[in-house]
Amino acid sequence: MAETGDNMQHQNSSKGPATAVLRLVAMLAAIVMLASACGDDGGNNADSDGGGDEGASGNTINVPDDQPTIQKAVDAAEPGDLIMVAEGVYKEAVNVETDRLTIRGADRNTTILDGEFKLENGIRVLSASGVAVENMTARNYTTNGFFWTGVDGYRGSYLTAYRNGDYGVYAFDSVNGLLEHSYGSGSPDAGVYVGQCYPCNMVIDDFVAENNGLGYSGTNSGGNLAIINSVFRNNRAGIVPNSGSYELCYPERETDIVGNLVYSNNNGDTPAIDVALLAAGNGIVVPGGMRNTIERNRVWDHDRTGIGLVPFLEEDANDNQPPEADWDQTCDEQKSKPATDPADVENPLLWNPQQNIVRDNLVSESGLADLGIGSVDTDLSTLENCWSDNEAATSRPKDLQTLAPCDGDQVGTVAGEGWDVDELNVVAWLSEQADQPASKDYKTSPEPPEQENMPDAATAPAEPATNMPPEVDLAAVKVPEKPAS
Amino acid sequence: MTRTRTGRILFGFVVAATLAVGLAGCSGDDSDGGDAEAGPPDISGPAYEGSVRVSSIDNIYRPEELKVVTGTEVVWSNDGQNDHNVLPNNDDEDWGAETADFEPGDEYSHTFDTAGTYRYFCSLHATKTAGSMRGVVLVLDEGDAPDVTKVG
Image (cartoon, rainbow over all chains, first blue to last red; front, side, top):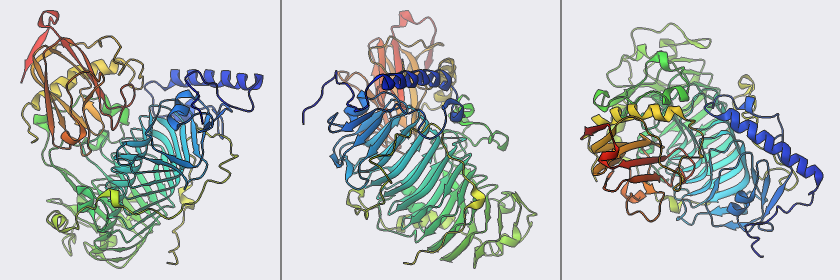
């Protein structure tokens, strides 16, 4: 196959006046989006031009028929184009800076980007709005499989990411997104990660994360962020929303974790960063997160806690915690503030979990406690977390659901005493970190089983991520059934 | 390399001075952010001399823009939890820190002896022209910097 060259024209069977009009419309739409996007990451829906495949150009670039590599196709594309990638192994790292592209593999399991443990990121979308990536695999990258950074509007569907050196699927400083029907395994940090956004306005739906250091990690993310209908199993720890000043937009807050299967996250045979060693053996664990809602999850088989609210003691913090009055500030508002003089930063910095709601979960087979909360030199009754209607056999402290029941969406009347009975000793976890099985080399992580393909990948029209996220009726999300095996 | 706190007290001061510059523009506009051929950045406030710190957290340099006079040492510290690097946009320049030498807790320093515009980026989290983790050091001859603040 011959390389087309810099002056190539898009190869498309539908070229003609109609296409030209569509291109003009797409260009005008792009200009409008650019003009309105500056300085505002909170309202992508206002920037978008409708639902479905709106924003698409109608043009398709085929790889390798029209362009020999995915990167060349991306570079040749215009906003709204569909890039169809045939089956094959593509040893490249793709950077995307064009709005509203849809990049789709012909077959999720055999359209493979391979970093050969030399390249850094599989597909990386930088500051381009509305880019959707679908139906392909990224493996063997030194950092991330699929990565969106600084974008407004994104979608990842039917993606498989495995054996990558940092995260599998990664959204950072990005808003208005959807990650769905996807899979991440064999990463020392997280199989799927959402960081530094508030409000994130994003949904993780039907994601499977296994054999990672952490199944899900979300540092300083939240605000209309829902993790639903997903599976987190056989990681060191399952779902880990967390706060820290090593990223901006702290603290982590307002993540809805609903209707997930979370089990057997005690796997010592995975790659793992230090935090994963510290958090090991927990199903859903919230180090220093605020105002999260954890409900109707099925959680079982964990060495420590099924659902644990714990502190994060940050060494060498870069800033102090914002006061509660500032938790409603958007990420952009917080970024615009001057940094704190390091001499005034409290070190180490204790991030306590506060105002979290834990209810209606089914939790069992936990080594320390099905439900737990612990901290350091803190009166736990002051943290305003609550637990209600969970089916759980054990808790630390004892009778947690009586000590601090929820009252609707609020914390109910919190008992002033009784918090010292059967305390959860999280301080011991620090010393036990060294006893955890050492991190495995991510390069040796196993290949995943074949994953479900996107329906109609060959014929479905381009669908840029212009109206993300979809509306989710959280109340309709049910406790998932336990798998047969 | 060992992470130290020396000089970090200067960090907040420098950030505060430079943030105002960043706010004047659009943070999402990459049109003039990392192009090695672009002209010198317009950075208000004093130029610094001595030793100035740039904190690399996940995934941004703080401050992103820095104005110094010749002979100033710039110290980059990886204060995040992820790997980063510091790579000059101009491949011909002989400075910068590769990923293996700039893991969390590491520091890298370089003294700029020649006036010019030095743009750089973290290849893991940005490109030369896009992404959040890009920075620039504007180095002026002392005679071209009417307002100089000594730090470090």
